[in-house]
Image 1 (cartoon, rainbow over the protein chains, first blue to last red):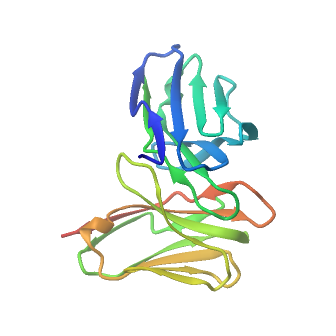
Image 2 (image 1 turned 120 degrees about the vertical axis):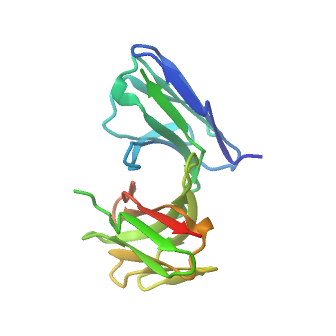
Image 3 (image 1 turned 180 degrees about the vertical axis):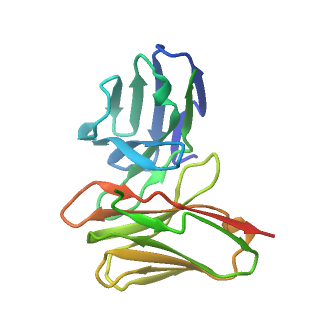
Length: 112
Length: 111
């Protein structure tokens, strides 16, 4: 009954590979997000989707491509992985207004 | 330059002590949130404040939003080892729609 679940929890892969991270929320929220947390724990938004429509697309390399098949799912595909992509990636969702986020437990991506 | 400055960056205290962490900005925020993040997990929402001067209490945690809505504080009374974690503030600037996160305060409470 996890509210925001993302898989996998850990991902170790070689440079140049393509990988995907999946996210699902069962809260009925309209908006979903991908955040990247670097080694200093700083959280930076990457993408936001509202009801399957892209509404925020920060300055992220176009090797990163989000896909939202429905409002409960937001997946992240990364092409040609680089060492600098190593980080923890968090999926989150929230309802409208001033409400806070519900985060998933994160995917630790390590590129070797 | 970060839009939300959190201080201190690190805090190590003994169980039973009180502490306050701060979140400051030169910008006005329409709302501000506090989260706690434990190792290997995502941030968990503690509180949202929206009104200048607002004070909210959550057991031993007291949150305050500054009168001008540019700053916030989190006070913990009689800290316990279970309070250990990374405390993040986040907010939406007035007129904006993106949430900005501070860099966090890492708290360690020793038994």
